[in-house]
Image 1 (cartoon, rainbow, N blue to C red):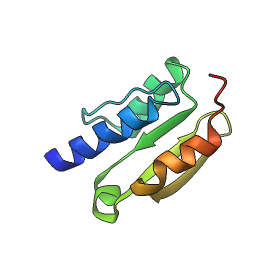
Image 2: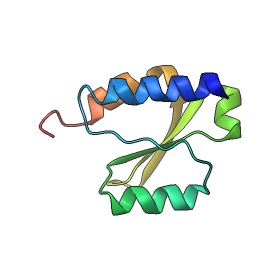
Image 3: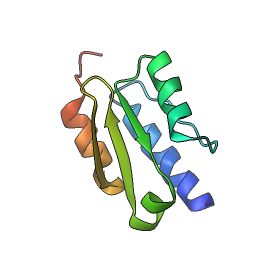
Image 4: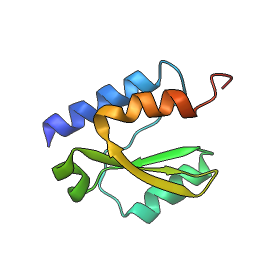
Length: 88
């Protein structure tokens, strides 16, 4: 679990190089994370549950388009760089 927290922290710090990013490490129901993200005006919400931990993936929701996909965590930065406007 500590390694996962380190990985998530590293991902968040990398995203902060080109976009605003916030991450939470507390265990909550996905709906609560979604509610918090919407209140804060987030464009994307990434969730890592037990299935994603095992598979090395992240469930990524585009809150503006109501779309969701699952991708390898190793591909998250590249994906976000190509889908987040650098004008932010």
